[in-house]
Length: 480
Image 1 (cartoon, rainbow, N blue to C red):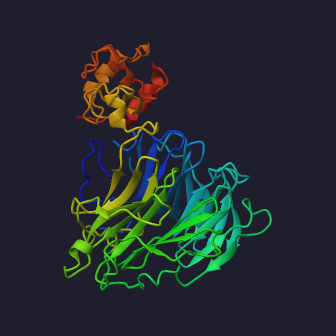
Image 2 (cartoon, helix red, strand yellow; image 1 turned 90 degrees about the horizontal axis):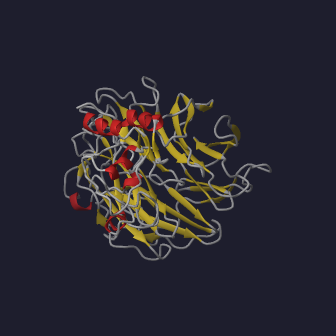
Image 3 (cartoon, rainbow, N blue to C red; image 1 turned 45 degrees about the horizontal axis):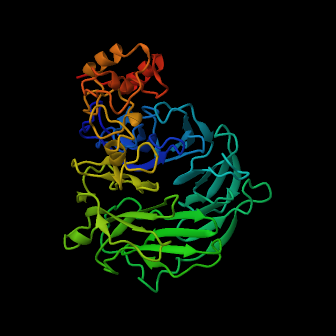
């Protein structure tokens, strides 16, 4: 994703620690934020960001949100109305917002304290806390009830470095693998979050005693981010203990826990690193898990060769699918930007057909951010594979690039994934007001000459080709 205008790698830069969000009202729209190092010769990082409006098929990186300003630890989320939020540690915590799917970001709200390892969640429920923004950072807790314009401090004591999940009743949970804090009131009108569960580890030792193999695949950073997902009164947590990926579950709101379940199917091999775990849960209940894994390279002298592995469960975590690698191998010691690490976390988000993943890897011999879709593409969010939509002509594909036309936003008439002068000429020919509706029987010439292809000029999908579409084209136009 950290690419130039033509989608090519930017040599000698570095990018790591990605966080991803998806517009729940329009799954075509996604944004990813990361730590952007313009040069590997310096550890100066900025708030990198890219957006996609076609379900992740193509991405646009327009540079740092605040060029020349130090920024780190990015976390993204969105609200129930599709507004995006980007939290960044920049001497103080700053919150940026976007109402156009990540194209532009507005001036930030602030939490006026320098706090490390923040995490953020936005309440998308129908509870009394709907729309609230919660931030846990350096064991302190803040919330905003006005869309991030202002924040109120609610005290310390939440788990340091924890992630946040919001239950369907608006109750907030913060978990870091050692502690779980549970709010007793969705809006905290009565009292601050109550620490209801404390343990050295979730009940894991019976299955696989924690063991950290020699060396580290990420010497200067974390090897694990702990995750929690709250669904009704059931909690899921995911942790890495070096040699294992451990899934835990509570059926009583975190008071008691079932014995942990090992997700990695290579057993308790104390020579193998299982690290950077990610977990998300689809609306239909499928649990998706990814992590970096050294099992195929454990005989190398250093633990620096990893593959991204994937497994899922459709029975609430009782059983897990066979582990499969979903990336090529990469060397985590390449491209260190004067920091001997590849960030502290990656992130994934699930839908009913698959999962969207943002992760850091070194396939170009340097640290870069990659997007991976596991499962069928469903850019229009209709719960049908895009391939099936096109084959049945439920969706049309004028330029033959495999993306339903209703997901296109680039005026890309030749299907090369870019908007260039050739596409612009065709766009101008369609700049006449209402578009000609697509029909399955009308010709669909890929060069844009057919009446049917005028739909690709309607970048904002409002039924006409006007100045708003010209404005959208400017954001994705590239020179030859």
